[in-house]
Length: 316
Image (cartoon, rainbow, N blue to C red):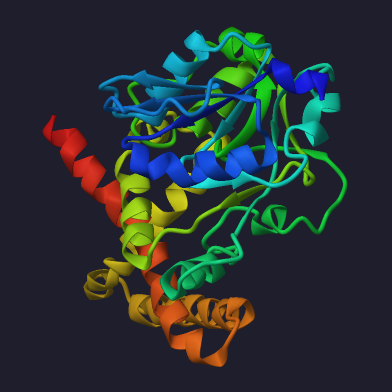
């Protein structure tokens, strides 16, 4: 397809081993589309004339993507993570929307690969809950109609290069949440919108349970650049922090009558919701206790990360 020559697929990563599987699977779908990989060390890989490596010491994904965009020579950009790869027609299904007025980004679902180990499969089930993932229904491909949404993560973005430049690049100093900042503090201030296209799908590998919880903690830890900009758009990010404050607030019972009763009533409601969601997303009954426990950790870890980030922020 002629239009595919106008695309560059951009992948930020740290090590070549992190991205090898992604490159291999991209080439099964797109044999000649340009790929730019931004990583932290040099590699010898001369098998693919349309695959280019850019070397940098940048730590943040946003900084790496900015550098890759500067090097890209094509009209369109497609962003994907190093642990992801496209389904068929990923790019083709979004081409017609690139010419739409005021559409800044086209984003699509990122669904679980077919072959996963048990740890990755359990994480995938946990992420299907609304108390873990914002708008998880958008990851299921059940709604065939494209629509404007407030946000989708940058592991699956397609856009014009000129729009990326117009929005002012990503914040290269942010180590997490740079995509949220790009959408709300850059793209939307230019009066552009994000279009969700359910037919522009990628497969996104799930982390192990340990790395999933660690990643959620780090999202919280590096959230302060966003939380300092208090507005309605980032209220969602305050919820984990408020939840942790609630959990440690039981000693207030010493000062307020009936606080203990209110505390345990709210806790009962919360645990009831977690229980119902655990049963709903679990593929097998034997997974229920594991998913319940992981869902609790996944709820608490961002709030603990925010608290740790606050203490470190005040220290600085």
